[in-house]
Length: 162
Image (tube, rainbow, N blue to C red; front, side):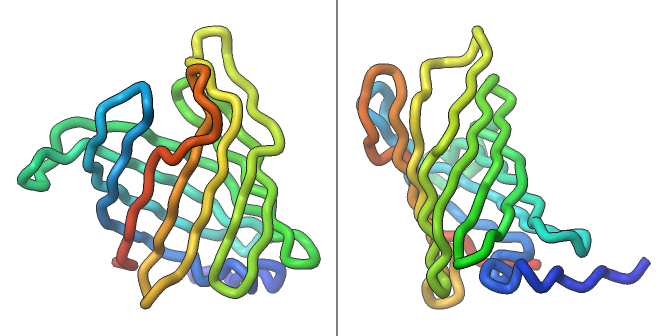
């Protein structure tokens, strides 16, 4: 089956398409700092949204995989006037809706809605930055959780592999 054409509405975020892999660092006032590996995949089916899947795993000091960490999946929906809506779902019982803006190869997103199941940890807000820097996908994530206000949590640099 032939790959569908990218929907024209997605032009501002089409640079995200493909699979990205790399590593990053994480930490938070309630946990120890850590190194992680990550794979992100952005896809499309010809409709006006991107599909999104991210998987992370803990890395030891030698850079070897220790165990899985977080997974998230969702959809990125480009809107008029460079506005963007991102819907993310986590297996830990959290669903987020982000709103933000695309300016060239920089994306800034803030949570508009956070919903949690009764068994999910307390998480109240997120702020994400994504950018294309020297051909690599750089991102940073701040979160508000467990009684701590919006604080730096994770960042990574990913290279396009497919």
